[in-house]
Image 1 (tube, rainbow, N blue to C red):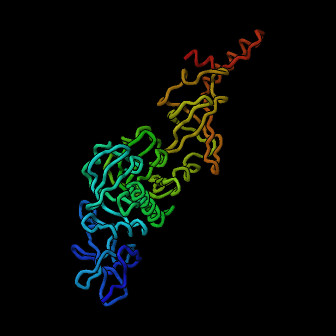
Image 2 (cartoon, rainbow, N blue to C red):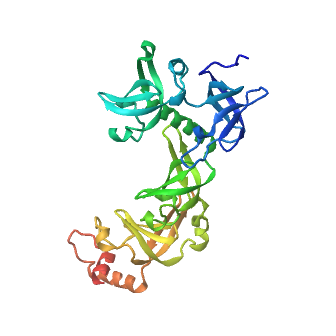
Image 3 (cartoon, rainbow, N blue to C red):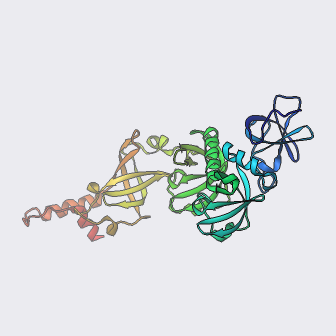
Length: 366
């Protein structure tokens, strides 16, 4: 009985069952198609497909009324007819890299000799040329001429296609707003890279916690499992951004209750900027004392006067909930104010062209 398929013919079907070594395909016939499970298994024997998944395969041959399919042609299955069909149909073929020759590599497809240029070997992470020798890799046939005597291959085309299919699959699986689990792959000064479903996503330092973090390695470690939310997905540029701070309660929501307008407190300087001092009020919340409110002369280098970690008594001047901004002002004691008034009075007849800053003088006295 003549088979319904021609060698190399591509079909799209569904997986109906997976056994220890075989994947069974729905052909709409009395029997299923056969696919070697090893073709879709990783080095640990795990497969990335499941029952019900759609899959594209190529018809290979019929053995004892069983229809065998493949996702790529292996060396033992290849002959000139199959190779030519693979070229026309775009079927991936398996070949062994035997040696490095001028301009690229010699590759054996069964008993047929082929050539893979340097530029077509590897994709994003390329190895040294010598590391490919002896490897069995998958290729696409780019040219097939002179009855198979001139065959040009590309390993890059296969890897690029696999990457595109992977990205398309992930784009369907991973959406902005989803909560995902991942494993920290590496720690960087600007954040951490996290493995999410096999994709390298970025957890920026500013999205780790609502508290200020200066050293990522103090809060995360390689191999650590985390739960995060996807906050940005740019599949065109293959970028995925995560956030873990999103699960923390926002301390800004209660800041008006804890620090009413006019209330005074002893704060700690968390950052010194050219335009003022940032005072920590709660975990992840800083208020600003603008330089115009500080007892210093104009153009003073604040970093020479104030240090991170020092305490400063301040009062809450205003809170802008919409823009998440808090304005603070230094609290001057009665004694300091009296000393300032006395200083101004003692210099009221001075006329040296300068404007006196009593708070600057108080600093000098201290």
